[in-house]
Every structure is written in C-alpha cells, then in structure tokens.
Length: 428
Image 1 (tube, rainbow, N blue to C red):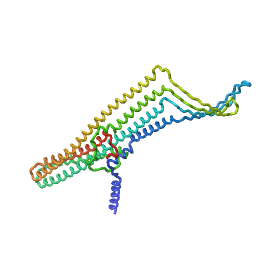
Image 2: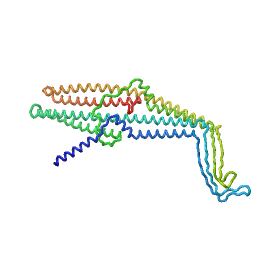
Image 3: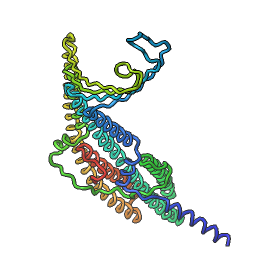
C-alpha cells in the first residue's frame, strides 16, 4: 500500500511538472517580449511625453489668463491733508487676459518642431521593436535548434549503445576481437558526453529565451522540437525602394531634418515683430481715486516690440541653425547608403542560407546511405568496426550541420525582413 501511495505521489508531481510547461511558438515569444521589454516601454513613454509637449505648445494659440493677489501693511502711511491719505492695509486681486496676436511664427514653428520630435519618437518605437523581435527570433531558433540537436545526440547515443551490445555479444562468442569493443566504448563515452553537453546548451538557450520574454529564467517551457523550413512569402521586388520608405532609421533622420528646419524658423521668429493685446482687472485697496473702500478698476493694453540692431546676432544664429540642418541632411544620405548595403547583404545572406540548407540536406542523405552501407559491410565481415564508427560520426555531423543550416535560414529571413523594415509581429 505504501509503495502504491508513493507511486501516485510521484505521478502527480510529474504530471504537474508537464502541465506547468507552457507551450511557446515564435510569434507568441515575439509578443511576450514586446509586452515585457523595458526598452520598448521606455520608447512608448518617450513618445507619450513628446505628444504631451506638442499639445502643450499648441495651447499658446489661446488667450492666457493669469490671477494674482497681493497684501501689504504700511506702519506709517503717508498723509497729505486734503490731498493724499494712504491706507495702512493695502490689498488687491488682479486678473489679466493676454493674447499673442503676432509672434513672427514662433508658435507654429514650435508646434511643428515638437510634432517632428513626436514622429521621431514613434519611429524609435518601431526601431526598438524591430531590434527586439530580431533578437527574440534569434534566441528562439537557437533554442529550437538546440532541442533538435539534443534529439539527434540521443538518437546517436542509442545507436552506439545498440552497436556496443551487438559487439559485446560477438566478443563473448569470440566472433570479433575485443579491440572492436574498446573502440566502440570510447565512442559510446563521447556520445554520452555529447548528450550531456547538448542538454546543457538547451537549458541555457531556454533560460536566455525566458529572459527576453519576461519569464523567470528557470521556468519550464515547451518549444518546437524541429526547426522548420517554411517561411511566409516575401515580395522580393523593389526591396531597396521599400526599405528607404519604411526603415525607421531613415524616417527618424527625416524627422530630425524637419525639426532642425523648424528650429531655424523658431530662431528667426525671435527677431520679428511681437504683438500682444490684453486686458487687466483689479479689485482692492487703494481703490480708484485712492478711495478707502475696496473697489474695481480695469485697463486695456497693447504691446509691439521689434529688435532694430543686434550687431548681426540674428543672422549668425539663423546661419548656425541652417548649418545644423545641412549636417542632418548629410547624415540622411549616409543612413540611406547603409540601409541599401544592409538590404543587399541580407539578400545575399538569405540566398546563401537557402543554398546551405539544400547542400546540407544532400550531405545528410549521402551520409545516411554511407552509414547503411558500412553497417552492412561490417556485419558481413567485410569492413572493420572503425569504418562503421566513422560513418556514424559523419552522419551525426551532417545532421547537425543541416539543423544549423535551418536555424541560419530562419534567422537570415528575419534579418532580411528587418533590413526592409517589415519585421513585425504580424509579418509572419
């Protein structure tokens, strides 16, 4: 009865462990990473801040209303009999309405500049997300390939173990030399170590993936067991033209140029006429005509200012802003060239990865055929055991090369999408 109870407890623990493993695919990992990543959250907060600044600058178009209150006590008020009698307690409440009529385009330039900064922040979100998605893809396919590597390493170990048992039986029957058994035992030890190393690499890969998606690094997760070769279709026409239109780095730099232009307009506006109109209302003591009782008074005012001569300061400051704009335009050309190079390089890398998959698959087929032939020849007594063991190693290497080729293929495809500016959660 005790043995049965212990078995039930162990079964429940094992079942809960399996259930606790969450099934993940690449798209889910992308979304989890975007929801968790601090850089993405920071970029979103910066965009919200830029939006608030832009909206705040637009409020300058509206009239400004100010309130103020003052109180003072005069210990020895001035008194001129029949002329002036100053009150000891003086207080007033003021309300002022101020409307900017003309500011040389300062408000519109400030709003436009802040809008460009907001657009830059939005493109920075896209840039940050694309970088994160690519890193997540890389980590995910690394984990999947490590899982497949572990499966093949276990298959290889199982094959060596079976071969070792067969040879051991032949040695006991004095059909083959013990040397064959010793050589096989060395390969068996190597295969056992390979399984251990593969299992450790898979555990580390899963921990890295967990870190990216915001899970505890030791949380058990379940991923795909084989790296697939299928990818969604990509239109390979006009890749560079699409990249120039879509890449967030280029859009960010364009908005930077626009912000620099508006900054130059903002600088120019400081040296243009400034016209203000306003009204002021006051209630308190002293009242109009220096009355002792609190009363209301009002006034209307206008203001016009225009700088006449500043020793060329205005032209120098405007020239400085224009030079900064030209500098940003040069950077735009540089980024455009870099993007063009990235697209071309990514296309070559993807084509190479595609060819690598084809070649490694062909090598795997040939290695499998060779292993079958060598195994048959050995059991027929036509080949030494070393040739069988070497054939198994060649088969293992060919299989691992093919798995790595599939991983490179998937990562290269993500890199190509990223270079064009089309790497998004909904892309694949």
